Image (spheres, rainbow, N blue to C red):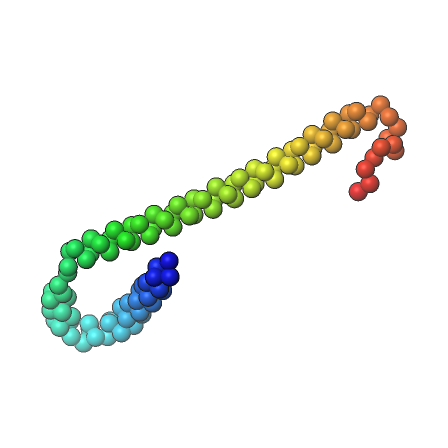
Length: 113
């Protein structure tokens, strides 16, 4: 697991670096010499095996994150259902108690707030 966290932090750093480079440093260079940029882009060699492996890892990571989010939502919904059920039982207890106590004097057997 520590390898996962290390690679994740390295990956986050790399993504941040890429965003910063593409937003700030690359536009002036591209405007100065667009042919050089296009030639560099055409010369990039892509290892398809590596790309497939990275795609698979990314998909697995996103799937795991989605499953965790769904699990958190389910827990949240279950907690809300429990709270509502608890309130409902309390209301039923109060209603049943008040109908039972309606034959008695209103000041008798009341719970203090």
